[in-house]
Image 1 (cartoon, helix red, strand yellow):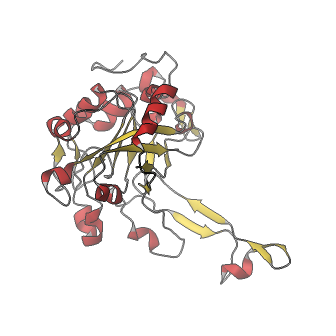
Image 2 (cartoon, helix red, strand yellow; image 1 turned 60 degrees about the vertical axis):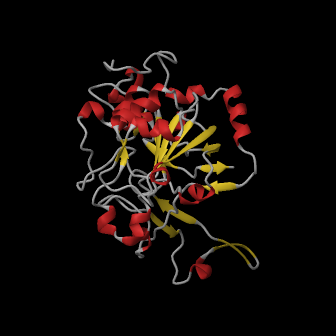
Image 3 (cartoon, helix red, strand yellow; image 1 turned 180 degrees about the vertical axis):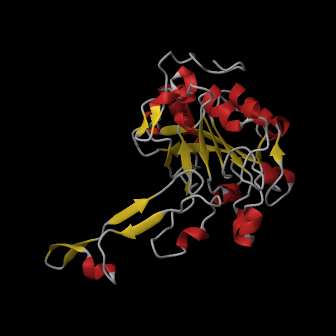
Length: 303
């Protein structure tokens, strides 16, 4: 069992959902009150890709990760000519999509995505994560997420367009921005870093701002159901696209492994930030990929 405060055993010895267990029917119903205007904003970046197109490079991603491949499943110089016919004058177009979620698109991490030693979250054996999938803590057990979202717009609070690459968000800063975090909330953290992509790919890859270890522990102590961020790793990254923190301070280790807090990364938060809303109804549903370490998602903010 991890030596720090943790949620192992809290939701039962066989638990695989972590703090998503906090989203009980009464908590979900209370979260609905955060929607007051009915405006719906997607928090996802687009999935762009083709086998013969540079389109994937137009969306922020980590260098070296396999980019999405999206193509029509029937060959032909023009797809309309090759689409599957279903009747006189009627045709159907089909898609084929290959996506590596981590580092290339808006996605949600499963609890089997990170472990230490021989144990997953809650003491499940790490040996259950195999090439054919994880038989413990896979993304399919997460289910849908419906909760109150709270936006920590750190750049706005500091009067910046985006945080600098080496910036680490402190617990004190989170408390200044949104001290009233409730159990079961989804903490949505904006760094503004995706804005850098259009200015310079090399600058985007030079590092990334993110949460400090203390900020991660602050959120865990407040029983958030999930942490979502517009950067690629929740915590910050250096120019090698790695964390500089010591192993015990790794954000994935603190949140996923010790506390069973699912993570969502690479969100697009600019449209939400423009509304100046700090709380809203948050929804996200990962694909039910059996044994998956993560899944693309299209998170929604309902204002």
